[in-house]
Image (cartoon, rainbow, N blue to C red; front, side, top):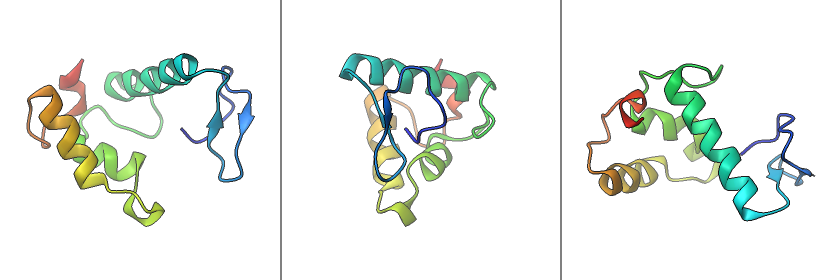
Length: 90
């Protein structure tokens, strides 16, 4: 997660990503971000985005990520196509 003042984070690394005191706290922060995205609370993500569109923003290829592979993995794991809207995952 990019650091934008998350209360749970104890700081950020040199690339601007959150540093959390424990894995569990970081996981819960990530989970909250995803729920906010799916629920329409996020200012960055829309609930109507597909799983692929979500990963194209969350982990863009221009940051040396693999959004298509990430989306494919997640979609397969939950048993839906990558074209599924993220709001349908809740």
